[in-house]
Image (cartoon, rainbow, N blue to C red):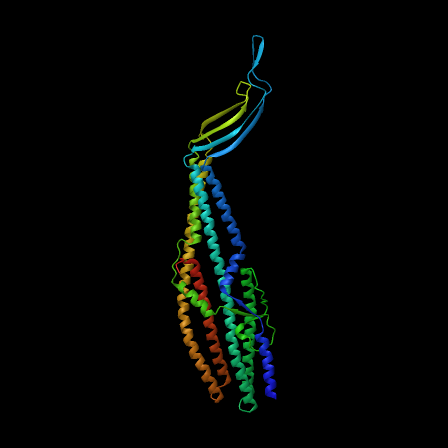
Length: 447
């Protein structure tokens, strides 16, 4: 009867735990949401659209323009001539002219062309800035997601240690009641359980903070209450505190395999950040050219057809055509255009140096990630071997304890060594992911 009752209670608990809603977070979904919700990217996209419109506006100056011109006039007195007792008026006190006018700058030594090229460079720079920001947002959300995976893996490993510690506590308590073990052994075993439970609670609190950071980047919380979450793999674990959410993510090993090819990346010397600075340097160069070209003669043509009154000195309506050319050239303007050209050249030079500094910084970051990754891969292999060894050591130590050959202090130490090795492996794998994500963000897109 007691066995049946125990099975009934276990069924009720298990049913409740399995019925808990599991929230799945995939890296791909988080990346999409982060890009779609980013106010920074939306602002940069607006700047790209604005610069494209500005480019089209500047380009329109290369073509003829057509306008409808209308004007009216009034004079208080018109010339008159008395002839044979009659007074003849040359014109009228009022008049008007209306008709289409076409105008076109025939020659300006390339000033408008240089302005158009400079506007095009601004478009390119804005597009590259957008791409760089997109890569940075992806890097941020990837690293935030890796941290969530790391803490979930920590919870699973700690829970495994807790199960071992709880089983050993039960064994020690039974041996103590039988008189074969001391109260000190029971105390150490109970401390081991409490210590592991405390570490799990701390990991869950840290996980709550990392989830908040991830939600801030993605712009949504996916309906998850992050205050005290747990991992899907622990739904059958004994819970003494209320769980706010049950999480499932991409397996850490799968994510690591997905990112491993980026270890072969090469630094992108034309990365969006560097390309944007290069385009801005060219923008200032073309702008300087447009100021220099303004010092040369400018030839403009104009023509149109007009309905007018009066026809010069004759008071009649007339439809006539009119065309002309105008040449202008600055003789003195206090060096304004020359100084503007010089200023733009200096700004171009500044952007060139800024690009050089950025390239050195990004190259150093890329190479540091490469170096760090190599060391982490060596650590990973060593830790895997260590886990095998410490696992065997922990098993043999506990057997020796049950045989009375060692104290429970040594069992505690062996269990802790195994746990530390397992946690270190997870940390090293997540750190590899962080470095691989950096290589991906700064490397050539060839993979």
